[in-house]
Length: 89
Image (cartoon, rainbow, N blue to C red; front, side, top):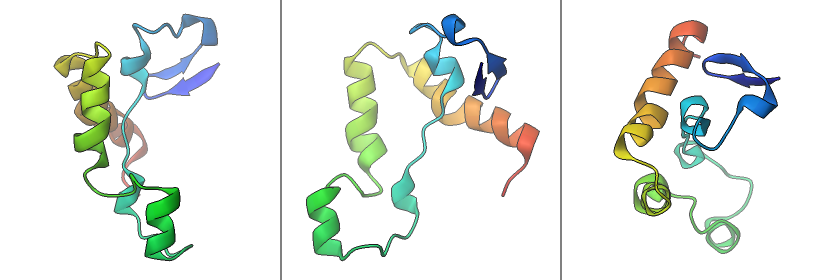
């Protein structure tokens, strides 16, 4: 079983056409990280910035056939669903 925002689902039931219904996108760059210096971070994690999702991830998803409706589901509806069940932090 795989825990998803819509509840537990058997692994074999997760097909590529269903994945967007069980994923939401998080940008960890919103978190402060001081584990290494900024110049080191730029070398080891060059995409650790606030624009990574909009500049890199979303165009890559669209280039691979993900629709705007599916992206809306991942960015808006799925987080709303999970936070309505679990509550905010």
